[in-house]
Image (cartoon, rainbow, N blue to C red; front, side):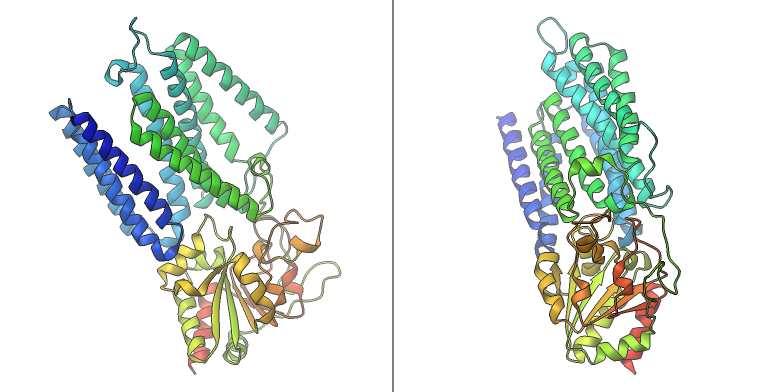
Length: 469
């Protein structure tokens, strides 16, 4: 009876997790989605603690773990800036990966506690398969997420790190990992267990270092998928229905999101994994482009304020530069002032703007920008031709017309926001450096573009001051 109740509790938690994913698919329902997820996790933890046969010491350890982990999580949640969410997510993924490694080790060295022994007292072959897969995916997730965290946090260069024969080495290591897994399943040798772990840690490191800053949104969602599959693999090993279901949900949703991100950049997932795209090198002088490019037009915040005050339709395009400058609050203030002047204000979001999926949506929501004013690429692109002003704050590659015209460009074919179709484009940027893709933005040199050089937050504050006069 107790086992049946536990199964029903896990089923209820699984349904709530599905509802959480559904809720998180839209900003207006995201709070409800978070609530569903928290309630589901609470039910799952309670069902685990109250399982039949759970000893007092076991319950005490679980409660201690909850208090320690919950305390750390509460502290981090209070201290973390919204602009640092991408690296926080990467760090959390690394913990999920390491948890999978730890559970695999526990199951291997104490199989009787997990009920995975056969009649002869050996670990079942099926359990060894599940264990080795969970171990390998978990270790790859851990080391890969650590590298992603270091790149996102600026502690490691965001440029691709490549060397001769890199892909061949990765392929050889992947084949060796497969051989080790097969050998481990056949023999159950502890040495092979740890060789799988060490090789997987190294492979995760090698897989992520060649991936550049422009591909970080895909990397984050891909690592999210890895962490889910690692959890699902361990769920099979320990015979936990909830781990299997939730791991599969996370793994599948992360994989789908990775596909959407790649589609947003017109690239295949294999192309991203091979890396080599996203160099941060390359720059031009603030006075103009190189070669035959015309000089850029530089304006002032007062110029921008005057033209926007007389505009009827304004589309704001936020990017990672806005996140770095933490300019979302003052940007919302600027939008409110323009609406008071009678302008129609919209926000255009590219699917890969920022450093993680939904990064710009989160920042705008934090600044209390109305959800109905925020539009995705397919919805907003037809509106640019009717816009009096397109106000670009910190975005770069996602507005580059070269993606549609220059077949030699590394971003050719990537769907972009049609900013250049607006009557006037204001582009806030510190200088003329290229974006993460390492290519100059042709939009800078268009006759309808005016550059506003400086810190995104400071420039926007000056525009707000000019609007208030």
